[in-house]
View (spheres, rainbow, N blue to C red):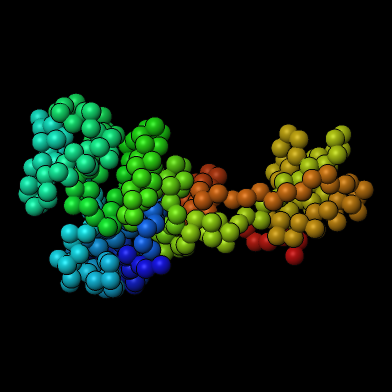
Length: 328
Ligand SMILES: Nc1ncnc2c1ncn2[C@@H]1O[C@H](COP(=O)(O)OP(=O)(O)O)[C@@H](O)[C@H]1O
Ligand SMILES: [Mg+2]
């Protein structure tokens, strides 16, 4: 695979009268060709700063970046024609139709006017393209924004928080659109602070927290590396669940009691569960690992998992303590 985008050791410090803020603290990212790559991190973690830096909109303090093998920002003019990006939410003139808007943009960018109907078709706005933009829903405006970024047939499409403000239906449509683009050979980089539906469209992810990469790779490898050590335990019907839970708790297990089973959150050695219970003549009927999803990994790595009785502040990271293994 070839990298379409490479970032290494990126640093950006904002200075203002209020002081100095390290937005990027040696950030690294690699996006391979043909992928839909999710750039995930909580609010304020440095996603927009990274994308703006990449597009030459702000100057970094240190680090190296390359798009399609060309070092940026120095050689940005060489690759700018192959990169479509929506970083700030674009403002369109409400009295123009989508068709007029795109025609003007195509004209200004020296793009063949035949691209206009093509991108309108692609983003699903064909039938509404002769209506004024002010009559559009937020989701339709997002599509128009994507259409404008697609005019020059980019090899790399960069979207900053494309799911923002969309309802679940809108997010699903965005997801289908990203898939279509990816299947046509385009590389898509999209940032998000919410995982829900976004995780379903990504082939690979980079997770950022406090200006640093905390993990990256294919979705399956990220899940595998951070697989939870949680197991679900079911006993024979009629056996005292609470009693069994108490036995394990006494040995240090993090037990959560459910209606007809319980889970052990720190079971890095599940055999210990069967052993401890068997010693008390309690027999396990079912013991299954509970697989983590990307959201669990995200919350754990970015320190944004809720903590009882605490209101997490935006700059607070990794406030949660990772559970150590039990029963080793
Ligand atoms: N122009 C700016 N001046 C000062 N601080 C900024 C500026 N832009 C962003 N920041 C700060 O940099 C950090 C990263 O912000 P940002 O890149 O927008 O994060 P994200 O897009 O992940 O939400 C935040 O703490 C933010 O407040
Ligand atoms: Mg942002």
